[in-house]
Length: 415
Image (cartoon, rainbow, N blue to C red; front, side, top):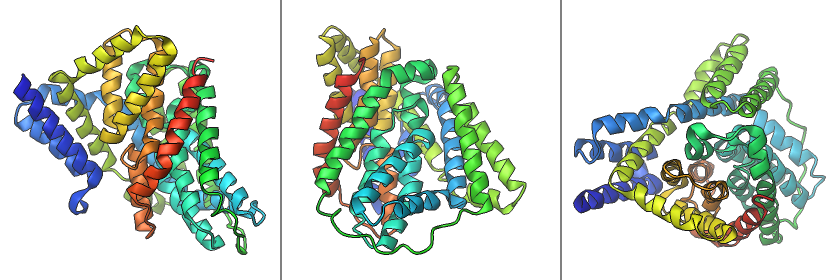
């Protein structure tokens, strides 16, 4: 068993490390699926267990599919460019005011369309606007990255990791808000204040004339209407305590059908623009985590949770949140969320501890660029636009932002 454990851990670390580093520019999905395939072929995880792990993620795949279609519809209809331009037009020449408006926009997009939408689709729109305004782009694009994680536990639909951690035991909307609304407010406000303070020198310039406001096309208006109806449907489903995969995917397809009736070319552009490789990537991670659980890592996590459950609640909350948060930056928060969720489902974990784990998984990745899938996708989006923010630049900000936001969130947990 020791040899099996060593082999599984080694293959998993190599796969996840290559997924994060993307050597030779090879897509993340190939590394995750490659690791899963090696584990299966070497019988370190049985084909039956691997198949069960893949099927167990069905609700997550449906949720991701729906969110990606909705985000791509909005992007194709120019909704994000329109929203970002409204923020710029209302900044009244003040970069600081523009920063605030973009931050608020990112919060709303994250809450209603998930953190991946903020990272992948809103970021290029914001970058186009700040270039038009001829101001330093880094504070604004950093705001997109940090709010994508800081606001990702406002609602159950704000982060796919939320579904992974709670699985079929996802709390209903009313209970979710009672548990996480105040910690979310703390996370959002503290992150804004720290980033605003760090960026104060870059926000002292003036915004140049932006020209005529961006007009939203008919397709854009239909996309915006559809997004509103889809978000309403998801909130209702969450309020009823239903799994979110089918409602999310169903709402997205209904909106797509509505818009396609007017312009049939939309469907081709939307399906062509969606990053479908995210789905096999997540499936590969499910298999890797299943292998890690099979050789004993699950027992390690359960042992840590049992130990923390006997400690004073506030101390245990801080230890769980920071421990999981730091682990997420080394291994990415999606596999950490999978392991944590499985460990908690195997025990009667106190609710305050489970909630702290979720905050650690969602907010912890604001420390480094390797912490979450959303941040990795954000970095890729910036590189496509020839904007470079190094891992060291991000870490220098994250090492200040993340701990302070985490402390504020944990202190308000359960209040």
